[in-house]
Length: 393
View 1: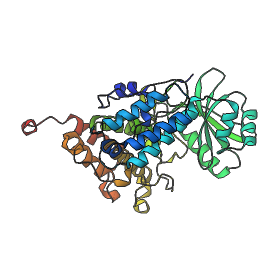
View 2: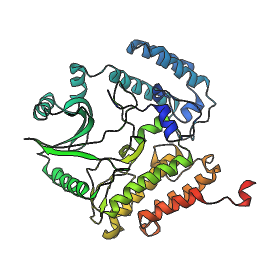
View 3: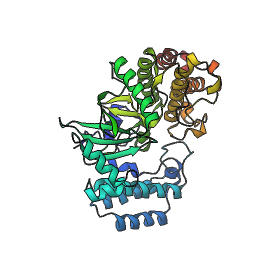
View 4: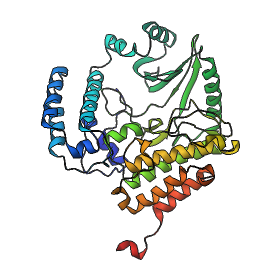
């Protein structure tokens, strides 16, 4: 049903440095210190009982066995020690399993409505379906402050992502339409940028369709974003550099066309056709236009001091530096910036990337990269710099 790429394929395609071949169910694994500390047998028993009471799938025993193995194999060094406690990890496991249980039950209309009613009223759902009859609605992906995103199938049987914005949200609608017009008119290369297929409107909605991220499964839709990869994979320094370069190549194309993304973060980096792509074009603006758009921790603290002619580029590069930090530290929690696990810094490339990341996220815009190509060249130099004699000792 969906275009799937399984976790073991992610590891193969992105060359992630993890010897184990993860299964889709590995998303229930606790991370970091929760693994190294292990989960008590009491907690394992609680989780197992909860699973058997709440999940009738034949996969139940397999999940329980995998969780038990995690507890038994508690000396595996997976991620740095800045991680959830075992209790929090166990709660996270419960949450993930409950979510997967829902997904595995498919898209029965009643269950579908029970899920979406927390985000859309039933009347709104009926209105959407009545006005967009060219699409078969498969899954409600989520909503932001103004719009919602759905996974749909169009008349040509192609599965795409559909962004809907109510026309009553006229302020956001105007800004997003302006950004879309500029994006579609200027961007012709979509190797590392999401492609917009169609833009339209109905009586009550403005909408556009675009590439949908690959899914972890062909039975239900869990999009593969850089954010979700933190749950499944371990990024090597090489991976961190390569993915950052892909992001920067996409940004270079935007910046060279006088556009800025303004919301670079792991959730907005997706995997499509084995390519890393920047998605969510809703905040795209002229790169010289000052705005308050963005996500906390990915916005420079000195934003008010950045000259207007550098504003969009500087904000995008700063955010990319934070994404590089998250990959280098193998932890999506960037609130710990600039902490890097000492073991990670034993790797020479990691030490170089640490310096690059710190420059990209320097407290003062004057000390950060002045353009996208400067950031790209720094990464390329770090990857290709020849070894010196002392490096072998």
